[in-house]
Length: 358
Ligand SMILES: Cc1cc2nc3c(=O)[nH]c(=O)nc-3n(C[C@H](O)[C@H](O)[C@H](O)COP(=O)(O)O)c2cc1C
Image 1 (cartoon, rainbow, N blue to C red):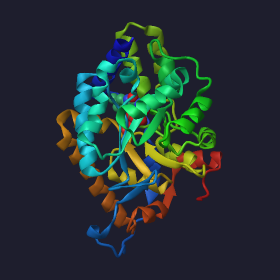
Image 2 (tube, helix red, strand yellow; image 1 turned 135 degrees about the vertical axis):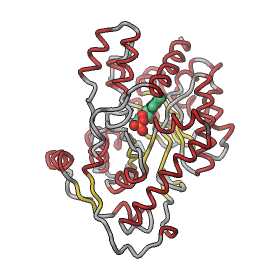
Image 3 (cartoon, rainbow, N blue to C red; image 1 turned 90 degrees about the vertical axis):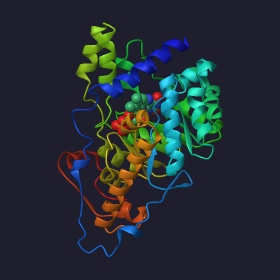
């Protein structure tokens, strides 16, 4: 049982690293323009990137999104990412812990993160479908395995529907999330994996007591395409053509952040195709408290912890420049910085009643 999951994880890493696996459409952040300040009255050295998320402080508003576990290569990747997260003072997620729960022999591919980063903020990860089947005990197992500071529950309806052998029953998920919130003892984050989360779904999640929603909108890594490539190699032509039809499905990240930020009482993580510090700045100005990056950290971690640290430092430099250019002394100022919403994103907001700020 566990070995199928492990094989799938290995294929996911390989395709994500080698293939053409991004959305053709963008994350729509190009439709968000800051208003340039020619007189910021700030020095680059004085801007302060410290961020608050889930009651904790981090060096900058960036988190390493959950990606992997279960294989030897995943162990090396999680070790590199955890070393980087610890050095940088930012949170890090691991990938779905299903493999580690089913097969204790691969637990170390996850727990290595805690070994090398005893003080880092680590986020456990489990799929909603597994949570429905395995119940709260599975969620508790995932948290205990890592001594995690938070639990991320991922929603991936489209990925399951196009995946050979994937789940097709998505009932009971809201109640299962509510049970996990009550029982796991750490804050719960609900995330997508690339299709985004809407206002309506975020409202349901807020009512279950979820503390944060990580939108993982479209415009970055495309799981429908990754599963299409897997289906093709497995000779499953039907699933491959289904995936082709839905390849561009999903709420672009900029729209998803605006949707979810409308719901009071939950923190928002802006992710899905975030590739620069300017894009980090933009999701914060749309209402997020943190930005999340996945695939670029995977590629860096394969090279080693130094490459992952260098990636985050580049993002930090770009974020600081965006802060000076918007006259933002700190992350609070940046979140209130004037921005103009253009084109298709404006049309989306008008039709969804999202234009008024606050
Ligand atoms: C190789 C890889 C594996 C992933 N595995 C998981 C996972 O196990 N659980 C999860 O919640 N998200 C997973 N994701 C999704 C990411 O957390 C993130 O939501 C998504 O990739 C969008 O971010 P990006 O465009 O910066 O890659 C994975 C992403 C990648 C690239």
